[in-house]
Length: 295
Image (cartoon, rainbow, N blue to C red; front, top):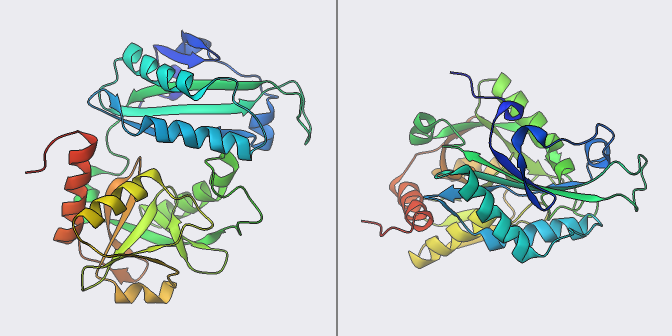
């Protein structure tokens, strides 16, 4: 069954200070954010009716806006409260929350100093980002021809919409070749991340190696999984990783708000085992987000 298009759904979206009917939330086609990517957003998970790490996501939203040169016209506390309010109104039990802020239609040029800043928060029921059956076996990644840009060329530590253009291109190309997602290298040719998730590798000695996030987002889930691993006395090594080193690793997984902890079975010609260490990290992460004791 095909999913309902997002513009055909019902209920409420929090829009510029209040809940508005879903179908009435509209922007003008000449909005600056649509043409010039002056737009920032967050992606948040709802587990059993509660938003996981809401405050951290909101802090990052405000950081992203600041880096993009505009100010969100609400306090962080209001955004936190409104995220919870819209989840309650929509009766979302296990789903996704998308806060987004963008420059409006007052100016249509490179310079947009006098544009109004709009804010919306939508939420919907949502299960697994990747096919649950594929997650059990591990997903397969292509290696993208597109690279994460140098940190002095973009606001790399934000969730700004323009940064995701090459992610969409990479994922589409991977899907057309039969892969689930794509591994992106950084501007120096080192391993960076997947199109919307951070990446970890496991060595034979159970050490976890992960790229240093110095030209891409240091994800909230990434940091959470590192804390889980440290509690389990698993050594974390953050370093530059060359693509040719992939043959030295026995396991691999992705982390992200959407991806959660997703095992990887293949990257290009390199194969990995969905091992017990990765399964245990995934189970421990699920126990945390659902506030349950891991058996």
